[in-house]
Length: 102
Length: 483
Ligand code: FES
Image (cartoon, rainbow over the protein chains, first blue to last red):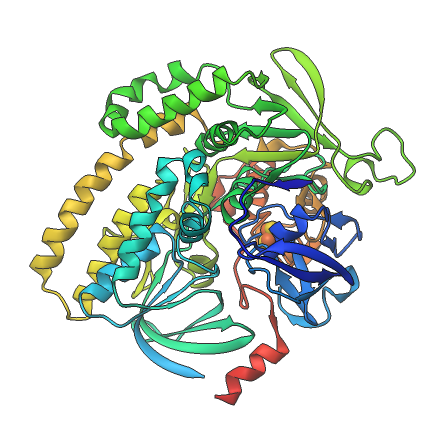
């Protein structure tokens, strides 16, 4: 869905999404890194379970919610990608369970 | 953990940086909490890393963005306790005129700051654009595309359609064209007759000549680019692959993994154009989550069609010791935001006894004058790009609340059954109760309820905001007790 402009100064790093290795550049937000890698959806809507993808990229819509290293409800558009991050889709049924409020 | 500080500034955009620098410059001890990894806010997002790692990209991101380097530099030059990557999730009121508790998380650890003065500088968000199909992956906002371009140097591949109205959309179009990124089409929803509508305000706008000139240049770039422009567009609808009786059912909103096209009407003709990414935009509105949480008074602005907190000339809200600086107090743009931030920072320093009244007044007067000039273009812009007037009348099958998937029709039906306001809509429909806590539906809910019930937006009001304003884990809460 997204491509990178030619800029090669940044350091390549890698992380995992749903068990798959993804290449990124240091300085990417996690959401950008996933979009650039061709991942088109990050969470399921809590009610209908339809696929959702980043909408605002500024931390207000929560459509980029993912699970990072076991902690759910992380906003991928706000978090810089890190080497060896373990990222999973935010599943609909987990929505209510392990976070207060929200 | 818990500690006491004079001033907490929430947000490190132009207003927050200026407020923090002004207060800290006078000797206040200031903590700056910001969600992002580096200062700049949305307007100057990632300015430091762009400058460091890919300075060539500044050529298409433009002067207005590059100016952020000066602004961030001035902020860095003053000693503040700046904590990037911090998410504020609760602000507690310890009684009028007393300290307030600001609770936030950073790297999974929560901390409470007990503060004398709180400056909310959380800026603006793009007005949510509820159209059929806006929840499909690939439908995002103009600001989202711009944000990805700034932070990570990525751009939409395939057919990119910009759809909406406003200066930000114009700016993004010009940036993409200058970066040689192809745009499949611009679906311009600005009502025809912009110049005659705004003509009356042109003389005053000339005072902000430089901004006006930049705008004309962008218009020229876009018009000469050869990108197809569909003007006066209405009836926008995004479609996924399931559209047209696919097995996935649920129409455009239910099925399909990704957006495939956008349909609309322009100058009497109906169009459907292929789209891999649709970037919507209908202007920006103040982010009032924190000022609402603190129950500061808010008023509806009919011209910009949004609520903003009421403030005095120093940015102080109806809640003593709580200030709002920048676009969070009303949309005025990045330059004006920095001025108002500085004015608030001086006021805070003065009330901490760090600055004489005369010094505060002298310095802030100059900022006020400059701000007046920055603002001179607003009436022109606001009438050229009027706020959308159709949201209150959206179709019944359009989703308003993306999280809980509540449609305009469900909201209207609830009203017929006695649902009398946005807060009742929460209990009737769970509208506004999802992860985003109403950020994506509050504006539309007010519009729909006002239009349906024949009431003013002020009378309808908006959601009461309850903590935590961002999801927080039990593990994070546990770290609070540990300290
Ligand atoms: S994309 Fe909206 S919160 Fe991240």
